View 1 (cartoon, one colour):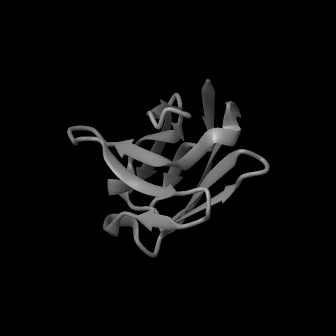
View 2 (cartoon, helix red, strand yellow; view 1 turned 60 degrees about the vertical axis):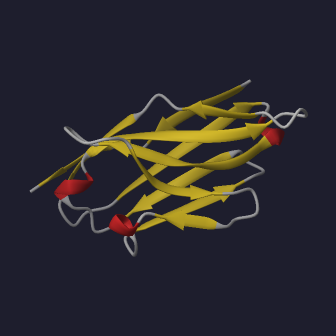
Length: 120
């Protein structure tokens, strides 16, 4: 019932910036939180940042001060601004959204993933 399409990934040199976007469609009025996980080669998937419908945010310690998450509920879009990128930020970034049904069942939806590569 919710579809997520990501864009904005690419190749950048260390110290550069990228801006990821994730657009939701479908039952968007029921979306609660949105955010990004990432998975680097040889590492487990980790939560990078999340934002709820009221605008409260959580950002991982590893990207604190460099990444900023924002959201426009009217546009059903969430962004991840990534500054001062480091090679260790290289990963596939996956957008997600959660939705709670009338029966209080929580569903989680995933974007297709976008590759971020930071060269040194």
